[in-house]
Length: 166
Image (cartoon, rainbow, N blue to C red):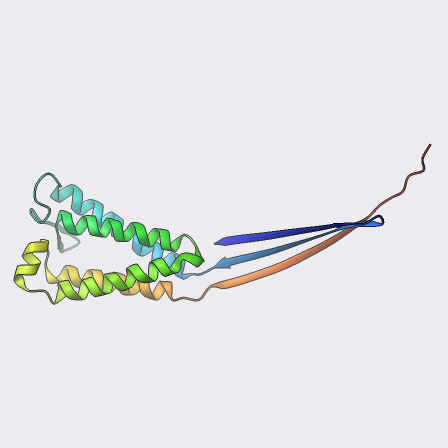
């Protein structure tokens, strides 16, 4: 949610008038893309800590939520999840979330349809590709949810009271 405020003050000999305009922007898609980002970061951290990064990034593999992950996949998921969190921070930066969501869909389809050699090089299975494609699709749909804008303006005026000079 982003809030913008503009304050105008007009001071004349008779009165002081101030106007405050506030604009608030929020998209429910921010919550969706943020949730996908959190899930990817958690799964990525689990994959990296279980598989380890002290050797090859594609072996050993580990099982998380019934999906085969390697440290390489975990690092990619952490990066994508963090970028989704950045994209969900403001309704104006949802383009980042849309781009990462689309990239996850494409990468997930490539992995899901990958050859045995590709899957061995990445240290994963095709079911993990479907997981990435679904998570990317959810993030992409969340980024496409419209932004709700609410604006209000308050005007107040105070008359100057003249005091006699002694």
